[in-house]
Amino acid sequence: MPDDTLSARIPPTCPPSISELLHHAWNHDLAALKPLLSVPGRASVQEPTTGETPLHAAIRSCSASTTSQSGKDAAAAEDDDEQAKAVVHELFMSGAIWNDVDDNNETPGCVADRLGLKELYALCVEAGVRAELLFGLLDGYEELESDDGEEEEQGGGGSKDNAEAPGVPGEDATDEDDIAAAADAGELEDFVQGDRAFVPPKPVTNPDVKSEDYLRADLTYSGGKLVDSSQNGVMMSWETSIMRASVDVLLPGSAPGKRILNIGFGMGIIDGMFAETQPAKHHIIEAHPAVLEHINGPDCKFGKEWEASGPTEGAYKVHAGKWQEVLPKLVEAGEIYDAIYFDTFGEDYSQLRMFFTEYIPGILEDDGIFGFFNGLGADRKLCYDVYTQVVEMHLSDAGMDVEWKELDVNMKDLEKEGVGEWQGVKRRYWTLNKYRLPICTLLH
Image (tube, rainbow, N blue to C red):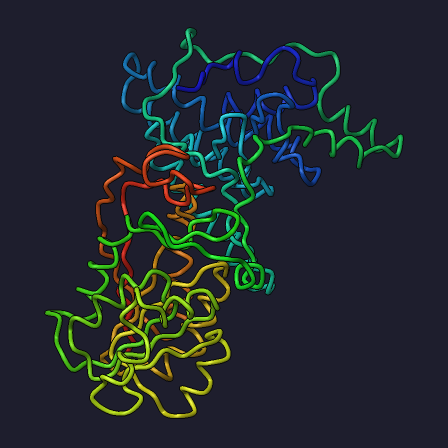
């Protein structure tokens, strides 16, 4: 469990210009903090060794104040909470970065969640949503950075020995004086850059896989998993229960005779389940040459014989190619589906958004259901919660409604990097014990 004490988070070696700001945030001293935030970037200063930001400090200090609130009346305790929320809000409004990580690989939201500070956690989620929506508006949408994906939910909370609010170390010069002196000397840029000298924990591996690189990579089917040549997990058998639940909501009662479209064959887990319902139409879009070769091999039941077994010509079909190239042809042909599932690899959220914004309204039956594998930000709870709200808003913009069905994920063999289900897989891309299954329908 991380050491959440003041002395551990803001050590004596911390530069005075950073220490003063962090102490004011820790003490929830909004009046003293506001003037120090006038320079852009100061809301996101970081202690050089611990990575503590003002947001981390303002939230973390609540763990100590919580333990001391037993001696306070309800009004005083509520006032402490309101002061903390006011400081966190001011920091966000001053440009504080919502997903900065410290030396424990925790964002401010991770700290709030670990300490059970629900209202402060909600403020962090709201800030993340605002930031990601802004990226989207600027057409610069970038997937949430979760760094190395190590699980940050460690339980419990810290406390400090002294129940009273810690004082700010005495300094002859104030942070404002330092800033003014740096500005007069023409060194303001260097001054601000020094505020970000902390080096975050290095990711175990680089999780980013570009679509074009993935499509060129060799793939291996073995041991209940599909991995690329870099040992990235493309699809794994532990996802089977999620796929089963997805089929159950996409095809209530496993009704036969439905028209189904699946984008991304992978191991064929969900397509095997779809096939069991005896659909009237079952189309699959798959882009990777190795997967297409597997489909036409002896170990897969979705090859040429399966295509020929359809009730009508073309009813059962594997469309080879990227969905971005195949779908316009299906739209032009007037294809309509009752159930659509989307699970690709090596594509960021912008592609999923484009799919449900530009194509779903034209190919989904009025009473049809659309779903996707919801692994958005799934290596960090904060990111998962942020993406949930972002997706809801973008689906609404696209004329769709979404309901979430929460599923328990058995973490027995998923808890540790490199062991259990993750043996032979480079990156643990799932860390959460809950899965939010999306059930998307057209608004009428």
